[in-house]
Amino acid sequence: MPEAPKFRKLLGPSFILLGLGLGSGELILWPYLTANYGMGIIWGAVLGITLQFFINMEIERYSLVKGESIFVGFARWFRGLTVWFIFSTFLGFAWPGIAAASAKLIGAAVGFEKSHYLAIGFLLLMGIILTLGPVLYRTVEKIAMTLIVLGVPGIFILTLVLASKTDWQALFAGIVGVGEGYRFLPKGISIASFLAAFAFAGAGGNLNLAQSFYIKEKGYGMGKFAGRITSILTGKVEDIKLEGAKFEMNSQNLIRFKKWWKLINLEHLLVFWFIGAVTICLLGLLAFSTAFGKTTPAAGIDFVLYEASAIAQKTFPFFGTLFLFVAGILLFSTQMTVYDATSRIMSENLLILNKEKWGSQTLPKIYYSFLWAQIVFGVVIFLTGLREPFFLLILSALINAGAMFVHIGLTLVLNLTKLEKPIRPSFARITAMVFSFAFFGYLTIRTILKI
Image (cartoon, rainbow, N blue to C red; front, side, top):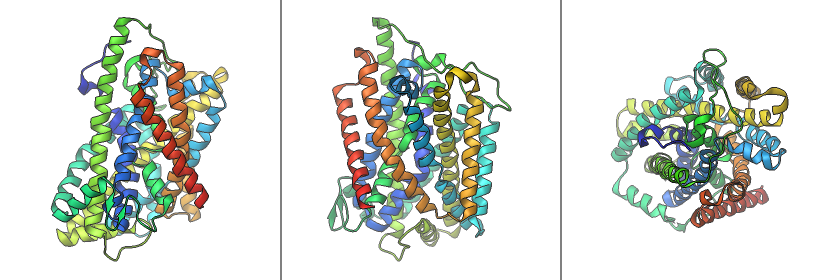
């Protein structure tokens, strides 16, 4: 086990995972719910991202110790799981709802009504950026960190200006499930919408499993000995190892593991959980203070346009337009990062399925094939007329809530059976994972029965 570096050198993977959720749950789904039902449901966002912290850390645990993605561990159990992860990832994230929302907001900001053409251009631009970045991980990391560092303080300042004392009181009451005339869930709320938002309070779906790739390519623990995906056009080829390495269970290595574990928990707690929870609450509060109780649209993301209009009226017109533009850019970044994560998941699982034929060095080619296949699929979706962003987001989130139910159980059992006893999860972590598994299972089954 390599020595752990200083804390600041570990920063990065959690920014990417936070960016994966910023444009769906944080910016659209939870503000939509608070704008329509009040702050009494924001407890779901806080609980959702808290559960995802524990889920993500168990995924990180495996790759930290093994130096390989968690999908390699799943495949050693049952190779057929590779097919499930390819299928469920494509089905859950191929729908370009985030890109549609990005184009709609930026189109409104610049006065361009045919936003589906703008969305098509965005998809192609995403593919070009990911294809030309020499080292893929660094490209995604820099974009995610820049947007979060610039965007979150702006959201905080805007909320401070617009939210009243009563609004803040509603937020703190909502964190413990107290709403206006209800506890926890208001009458008439769509369970499907709530489940979608709950699943995307953070990354959601199979995207949580992508954290396995990001910490490996950042060089966490035994991931130091694995290679990285580089551009097939501009990058320098690296020796990619599909299967990781094993360290001896001696006192020195266990001390190093414990130091790594402490540091990466702190990194994920501060970046993913704290910044993520604060951002969700602030965006929910901003939507509540500007749109709740007003004549807002009942569906879609049109309430964001109403929100921007209210911001413009309470401040200056420029700030309303700026809000739309910044929100659109954040959504653009999220969709691009989603494409990166899903292409990684599907390409590695396909390679695992055919590793005797292809070899690890074909991974970049498979990755870019999946990337552009998803982009082409998205373009076709927009050209066929299925363009409503909110419908696409709900559809994606519902599929991914079910996928989370599956991978939470698999991850827990994998870590309890395939890791040595000194580095297995504690009782508290096991309890958190079992609760997450049961909670997502309950919501998924209840939603299916309601359809």
